[in-house]
Amino acid sequence: LGTLKAKLAKLRNELLIEQSGGGGGGPSEGFDVARLGDARVALIGFPSVGKSTLQCKLTGTESEAAAYEFTTLTCIPGTMHYKGSKVQVLDLPGIIEGAAHGKGRGKEVIACARNADAILIVLDAGKEGLNRHREILETELETVGIRLNQRPPDVTFNKKSTGGVRFSSTVPLTKLGPDPEKLALQIMREYRISSADLLAREDITVDQLVDVIVGNRVYKPCCYFYNKIDTITIEEVDQLARMPNSLVGSVHKRFNVGEPDEDDALKAMIWRYLGLTRIYTKRKGQHPDLAEPVVLSAIRKGTSVKALCQNISTQMLRDFNFAMVWGKSAKHSPQRCGINHPLEDEDVVQVVTKTNAQQRQDKNYQSLVQGFSDKYHKKKAEARKKKQGKLRR
Image (cartoon, rainbow, N blue to C red; front, side):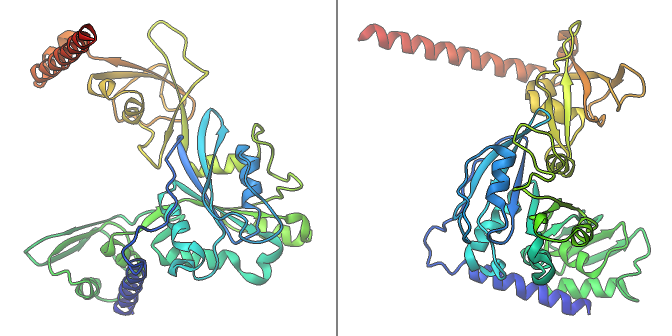
């Protein structure tokens, strides 16, 4: 069974690659949207489920909405402001069954979903009972290697040029049959891998093993919003509300969805699934800046002190000495922490950099001084050259 699953995954991947490369050599028409804000959310759903109207309520962006299908034909970005953060929301064209194989511009839509930090699947509550739209969309995304609400398996896999295959595990593998090593070798043989190291630290399934070996899977948090609940009975609303990772509401009746500047249940759900954290910074001897927090993302760079320094300045990261932390992540206030200390929402952080004496003890100090000197003289020479050019005129 494991070998059969590996063959099916390989054939499916080859079919997708063949179809994506059959466009005659011209440039593909995709959605080229600049990445802005602290996070990115992609709205995915079937036509006429209310994605454009929902984006207007979340971001205030005017998007064409009508009673007919395929109103939106391209990607329309907008920015949602919530708790001091800026979240980019992408309104994508509606997709249909078979989108993974190119139907209805499905490949462009799914490509945007792969680059997003999270996915918001919008469903029509009145049609879900008969059409199984949720299951169809999950299958389409699963086909192209997008794993929803899953974490990457704790498996280390490294290809080598020689040495054969070495398979080991730290836990009993009960889901790979009586001989897990033989199954792993058979799956690797399907992908023509003859030398590799594989270490499993958890009890994985055959599908997870195939995903690790293929290596082109992406893992995205996903939440489901059932729109138009005003068209169904209260019993059906209760059934949909009990579905995992789901929220019911109505954009038209403003159930769980408010105006762009209002706090509502849907914005709170998106914030939670994105894993955003607000950090307030302060200077020595001054009050913290509570007006503009630094928003960290657990999906992008993480929520540690190191990620905070990377968001502010690379020079601060280079000269980092220690940090003083006030808030929920500190055992006592303030707590002196290192660069890998994990931060929590609404922590206050004061970063202390190295003194000049400490910087001189660094082994790279001379190269840094020489680099600053070269930049200064280069800038001075350019200014002198520019001044001489103006005098000649």
